[in-house]
Amino acid sequence: MDIRAKLKKDRLQVRTLAFDGNVSQESHWTIHVRNYSRTHGFPVPPIDYKKYDVDALTKNAERVYKNREVYFPAGFKNTEMGDAFLLQFHNFAGKKRNKKDDAADWFISIIELLHELHLVRYKETFKIDGAIKSISQRTLADRI
Image (cartoon, rainbow, N blue to C red; front, side):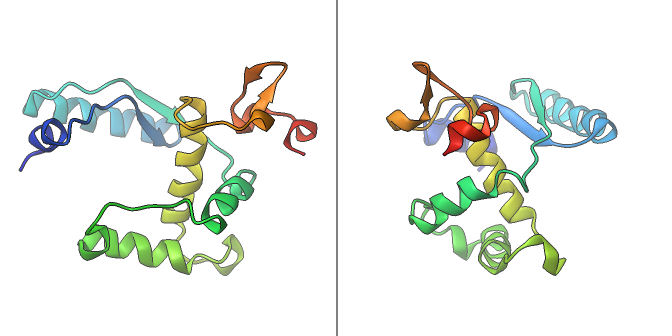
């Protein structure tokens, strides 16, 4: 089943396409995505390149993980990609160990992106002067 059929079957829409990367990676990946879009006739939104400081955002992801608020699709661990992801994800114990951390970095980044897109339910403590703010845009005083 191709990606278009799966998205249609699951009634999913691509709202954003966010990549991590520097300037040279941006042009490289943009070309690949545009080629995929043209070849498969599948429209994709513009790529939003993010440069999150994942080290500064780890506390948010740690809280979500410790509160057991992480759910993966049924059967995810039985796929090759899911197995590799979960192995990295559960074995991650900090940057100092110099092990693969792509899964942990993705998890930290997706939490920040979900907040930016306002796709999470906020508690009253996430409002500053009545406005909802992205976690990375709050000051240190607002985080306490």
